[in-house]
Image (cartoon, rainbow, N blue to C red; front, side, top):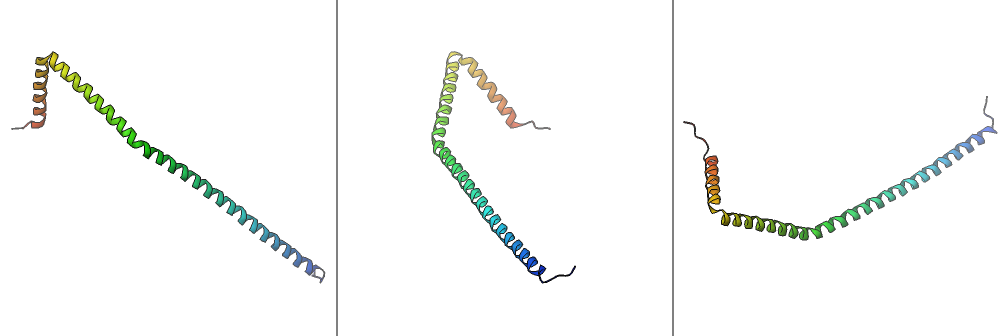
Length: 116
């Protein structure tokens, strides 16, 4: 098959058409990629804003929570002190014996055993 002058323009036209279609496809793909990147940025910004708002909310609530925990701890300590005081008043000899025994055990543990 030999190329005739009639077939050359047709091949050139087909090549130009294909190149034009490829260029259009390239532009379309770039536009779609830019849109996807924009959506990803928007989603990331929204997630960041939501996380920042939650962090601020927690930081604002922290002092109140700390105060509540301190008050509960103080109440538990006061109740424990009151129970010990009541026990010592009702059973002073038992409390004295328990104190002596505790002191002996702590002293024994702190002194350690010396091997001779």
